[in-house]
Length: 85
Image (cartoon, rainbow, N blue to C red):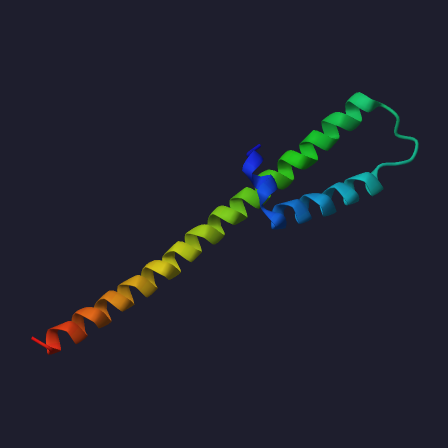
């Protein structure tokens, strides 16, 4: 798992909620620490992978929006610049 995810407040919030759901979903009679640990690791890994995929999609979308904005600014600048020559 990428340790940089822990710098992202949205990830920390999502992981906290997932861990709360995980803890409340286990029966009180559950006592095997090794099985508990494996289930916990799987839950954290799934949460991190899911968040990471969504975050990559979000970043790609933001990049596309910024590139469109940049291209629009360049077109406007090019059009306005050619009028003065």
